[in-house]
Length: 596
Ligand SMILES: Cc1ncc(C[n+]2csc(CCOP(=O)(O)OP(=O)(O)O)c2C)c(N)n1
Ligand SMILES: [Mg+2]
Image (tube, rainbow, N blue to C red; front, side):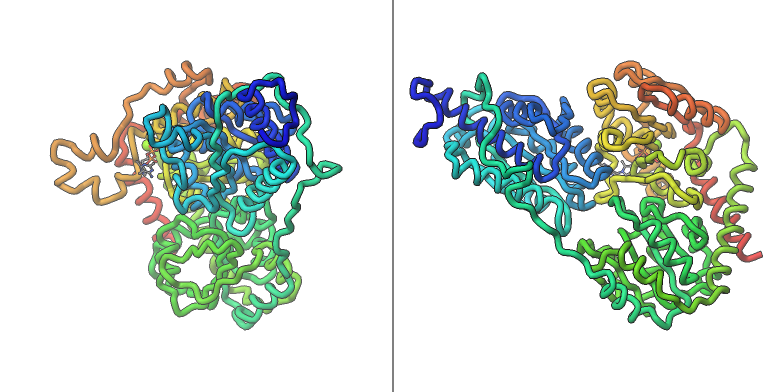
């Protein structure tokens, strides 16, 4: 050790451990100065210096996880909900690889995360030393930035460099197109240091970061002007709003712009914009009716957030290539599989729409009125179909609709991929101030959903409810451990429909090659056969079944008012195909209502 900040009498190993802990303490301290508030840890020996340093920093809340895959998805849910990067520290070997699915989702959904992997030092790599794999650039291009940190002496210069590294990691994760930064830390034994170094030196006075970074500031007036030039003479326009989980006032801005312009607002609940008088809730059903499409051709389309999930909406947009379609896409997400966009503006959507709302625009009142009247007819048709069923059966569409009515404004709904996210889009009503809706929709995986919802629960002040299918639930059943280990409160509404109900909508469910020996059920639908009450008992959640609307209302009320996490199981398993028929009856009823 060259610049010796410690007594010479200290054994070499102990001194090097002290230097390692000093550097890590500076790193964690600097992340805290930049604004990091949350970190996830997972166990191990090699990662102990990282994990203990983070856990000892008073500014950071550290959430301990047994399973790195759960830790990754928990961090993702927390980062989505808070809008801030979350750090995830793990040990060497396959532990790091367990983070891959969450890293992929964070890349696709543009969520900031900082992965800190412990590694063996170079002399213990590729030579049979235990628990050592090649961790260099393990996530490939799914990480925005990879850096091999190396091992260093804790000279004042290196402590300063370590602080600078923390700043760069934090700002890189959050700015531009947010995503994952991966830093790999070779850590040499001994891995403990008692007593550990206390206040790390070299921080700026007043708790300021070493390097404060200012992101580019959008010029909302100029962006609004650019958008206005493109849509100025178009009175029959439409705004399409898809997944936008950032903490921005986009929902209000889109609603205000559409109200002022007389433009219908086709908003997925994940956009936060299904609100206000211009919101059209049932576009998925409306756009299945050909005569409606022909009579409601827009002159311009403004797209914000990701593309909504609805297939009829996507098909419609793909067919409207001769209509100007303008995306407000500040993060360069390029949500355009049909190459239908005519313009993509790197403009902040909320600020741009707000700036434009104040400018009077010529509206065509009959345009919005036509959409609204169709939406009202669709809503009535849907209610007639759902009410016309046996009142004791709680269908999947009725459940989605009911959650849209029952959940308090302050709640957050985390929705799983598969039918939950689709049913919420199709049946969720327009509300004045709707609950926040989140979903792992970057890569459409059903993995890690319970963990992501618990991560969201760690960030939100209001109640958090998860709507999830039985296969997705089984996939991440270990995520339930967060309820007791982290003392978090989540209300899980579990749709128990005997496997992947989504596949019953697809040709694979009726093709002879899959029906032979019922290969379809065993290999595609994959019913789990689990008694979910046992899962609740094992992980310390309450469990009850709700098989009617009144039972659901009562069970939800109990679950939301208790301190413990809960599973409210909705068993619709009787016949998965009945769910398909019900959806088809809904779509036909809406078509009939539009054409009568
Ligand atoms: C990690 C991952 N594995 C597989 C899939 C393919 N997949 C899509 S939906 C689905 C079934 C989900 O079933 P469930 O959670 O019960 O929801 P339901 O279809 O019944 O609404 C599967 C396996 C996926 N999206 N992600
Ligand atoms: Mg299912």
